[in-house]
Image 1 (cartoon, rainbow, N blue to C red):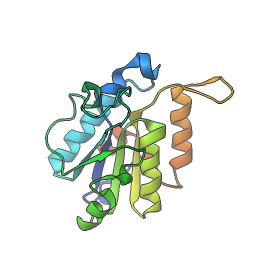
Image 2: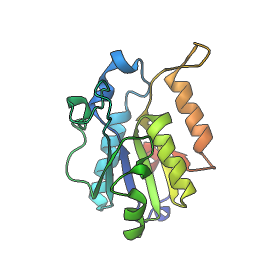
Image 3: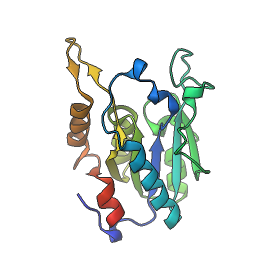
Image 4: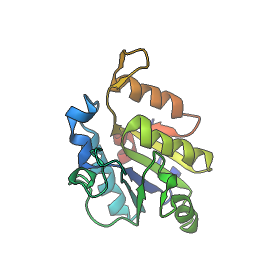
Length: 189
């Protein structure tokens, strides 16, 4: 789905948990969307050229065994996340709206009503943030191909593929909490 240029007026790009710990395939398992990081880098460049607001979100787990443990190498941003954002949010839970500093308060103070969400993982922190953004009244866009996730075990022991989880996230969000888009459509608008 394409977004026309007139629909975006100083939107914030919220880049969620693009951290080195997610490269640990032994811990997380198989992932989908191998072009996720390229698409995120393209969105970052697009936002910087336009001088639109950038928000980086960093998960800082209290669990020392987590690949995203606070202070660990895995907790650091991947190399594609460069420069200073307009806002850096640290969180310990799925939603970027439950971090420090307060994302909702900052967006409202900056008079930002539109957000585009990308990052890791599609069906956890990204989807949770998109649902909250929609519920809080933000015009929310979700760059599905600038997110990725991992295969997950169902309670019955079967494996749900990352691709299926991504498709379900798109289905859950689009038209209800957000507009699901692809990076190429956004960059062409």
